[in-house]
Amino acid sequence: MTPPTAASMDPREIQKFDVLAHEFWDPRGAFFPLHILNPVRVAYVLERAELAQRRVLDVGCGGGLLCEALCRHGAHVTGIDLAPSMIEVARLHAHESQLSIDYELGSAEQYAAQARGQFDVITCMELIEHIPSPASLLAAMARLLRPGGALFLSTINRNLRSFLMAIVGAEYLLRLLPRGTHEYARLLRPAELAAVGRAHGFALCDLSGIHFNPVTRTARLDRDISINYLAHFRLGDAAA
Image (cartoon, rainbow, N blue to C red):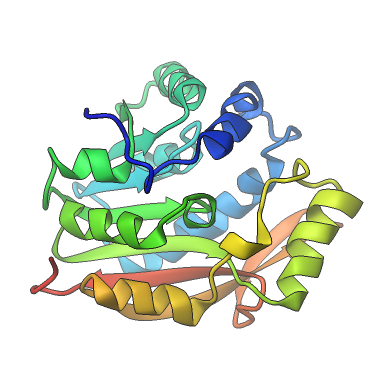
């Protein structure tokens, strides 16, 4: 792949996650919230898209938690990430789990140059708030999806409640996540995400909230999108 562009990467963000890669599959480690959220995300995708024998791309795959779940539901899965240690962990774990998953080191912008229109479904969970240009990411994913393909994103809303709960509470008080995991200015309101999506040919099909309980360590879908939310988009025939 060609070198990633400034729009697709922030070296500080890549390093932030790369140094924690060894903890990725520890359900009690730094990424334990992902282990709790993953079944909810998988159920959301399964309810809205056929996976069996479909080509699925997970953008920002990390150590492969979502990739492995989608693969177990019959999808032909590719995972891409810019953190080298994460890709190494993902490959090793897939090998140990005897799962056939294609992992590539790189960004969506890079991958779009060689895989245009090749995927039926794209997932992108908790990534868009960590990159300099959400528009560049959505444009690349529009190129990677076939017309009519489904895109699923999860991210954090930007408002006072999300700041208090997802940043102050989760990172500084309860220490559910490492401090500095999220930057408030990079969070996206649902309307902003929908507008960026429309600009690149995506139609918003659904918004759903994710309720995370730090005490019981459980998660479920609900109608409250004020903190964590999932978005389902469909790519139109005329997308660029």
